[in-house]
Image (cartoon, rainbow, N blue to C red):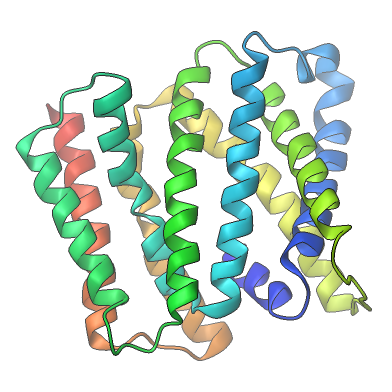
Length: 265
C-alpha cells in the first residue's frame, strides 16, 4: 500500500487519492459486513472516542501521503515506526504504565536511528521528514485509542467509522483543491488495491490485537520496514545509503527488542 500510494500521490493530490481510497473502503466494508452483521456495523458504546480514533487515522494518512510525495518509501516507513516508542511514553503518562530502563534505552536508540536517516547533509527532503514525524505522532493517538476501545467496540464498527470519517475528511479537503485527473487502467487498479488493502489490513491488525498482546505482535510489524525498503528498490530503484540503512536497522531492532522484553516480563 505504501508503494502504490506513493506512485499515485506523486501524480495526484493526496486528498483526492485518499478520498477515493476511503470511499472504496466504505463500499467494501458495507458489502462485506453489512449483510451478515447489520446494525452491529455502526453500533458503538463510546462513540466520541471511536470518532476521535477515525479522525486521528485520517490525519495520519494525510501526513503520510505528504511525506511519501517527497521521500522514499523505506525511509518514510522507518520514521513512522517511531510511533511505537511514542505509544510507550504516552502510555506511561496517560495510562500510568511503568516504563523500564530497557524501554528508555530502546527509545533513545530509535531516535538515534531517525537522526541517522534524516541527518543534516543527507538527501531526504526536510519537509518530508517533518510530515513523517507528524504522521508518527498522530498515529500514537490512533494506536492508544485502538487499545482502549478494543475491549468495548466491535472490529466491524471500528472499521466502519474509520471509513466514514476518512471519506468525510478527505472529500471536504479535496473540494478545496484542483482535482483534475484521468486515471489509467493501472492507476484504477492501484486505487482499488488501496481500498481493499486498507480494509483487509486494518481488519487483520484489529483482530490480531484481540488475540495477542501488542508486545508480542510488534516484532512482526517491524518487518514492514524491510519490506518497504525492498519495494522502494524494486519499484523506484532507490537504495538507501549506508547511514540510512543503519538508522532503519536501529529503529527496527530497538523496537523489536523492547517488544520482546515487554512480552517476556
